[in-house]
Every structure is written in structure tokens, then in C-alpha cells.
Image (tube, rainbow, N blue to C red):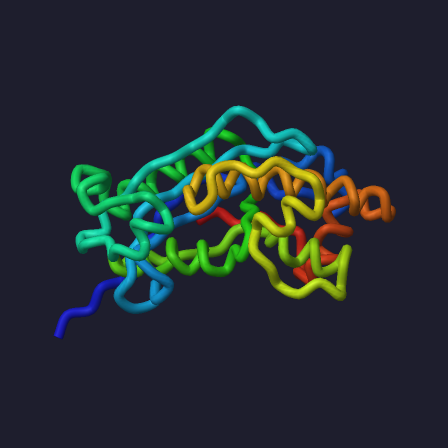
Length: 221
């Protein structure tokens, strides 16, 4: 029987941020993924990554997008939802190559961490793809817009991204496109940060507190 020691895919995030760092001085990569289905812990695979850099309270024009070859057919219902066909990804990078490119983008942007909407799903997609290649996954500092919404409006239940963008009056981009959803999430995130500041939550420590996260470290992957 053979055993493999898990490898690490390294990249450098911005330096560790002091807890008193103002929210307006933080920068994040807001990202989204699309997959062949929701069973990403089993049979379903990554087909697209999209991201945009948010610097303080400004959505930048530094974006990232790549299709991914899932090494399987894309179901008709996913094509109907995302517009991505099997033939569109036939010549696309492998999941590992795509994730490497995404990590280089994050490093280039000097991001302090990640942001997403229903972020646990997107992180699980990346984690499972890396595990297939015997790579470990260490989650960086990361925030989910749903946690911020839950703090600002505790009575709201979990809704679709577009619902919240409409509720907060922020831009909506192409839905169920990884880059489109990343851009929609980014504009929503910036607006949520402004609402937090209006409530006196102005530092990284405050952001960690309202999202129930511990510590202010930023971990390299």
C-alpha cells in the first residue's frame, strides 16, 4: 500500500493585519465558483472561477475569470442555469491549473483574504478539487456577506444574492456567471461595510466580532 504526504499550494497573502486596522484600509478578493452540480463533495466538479478585487470601500477594475475543464459532461440543467456548455470547457485549464491562476491573482492584488456569498460552498469546491490532487487546503481570513446581513438584519432569512442586492440597492451583474456573481457580491459587500460603519463598527476586530470569527490572522495557503 502506498501513502502520499499531502502537498501545499503556496501563495502569499498580504501581511497579517492588526485588529485595529480600519475596515477602509482592508483589501479582499471577492470570488464565486460554478460547478456541475451541488454535490461537490462527491461527483460534481468545478467549471468556472470568477473574482474581483475590493480595495477598502471601492470595487476595483481588477477582475479574474477562467473556465475549468471538469473532465465530465455538464448536465443540461447546469447549462441552462449558467450558459456554460461541455464544449465551452473542453479546452479549458484543469481545476488545479485554474486554482493556481486564481491564487496568483489573489497574490498579485495583495489581498488580505476572501469574501463570498454562501462562501462555504465556494471554499468547499476549491478544497475538494485540491484534495483530488493530494493538496491540502488552509482557509485564509474569509468573510461571508450572509454573516454581515445576519448582523444588520437578524430577522432576514437566507435568500438569493439578487434579493439582497435589490434590498440594499447595489448593482446586479450577470447571474450564475462566476464573474457576474462575484461583481454583484463585491458591490453588496462594500455597501454592507458602509452600514457597519454607520453602526460604529469600523475595524477588523469589529468585522471579526459581527461575523463571529476568532482572531485576526491571515494564513498563507
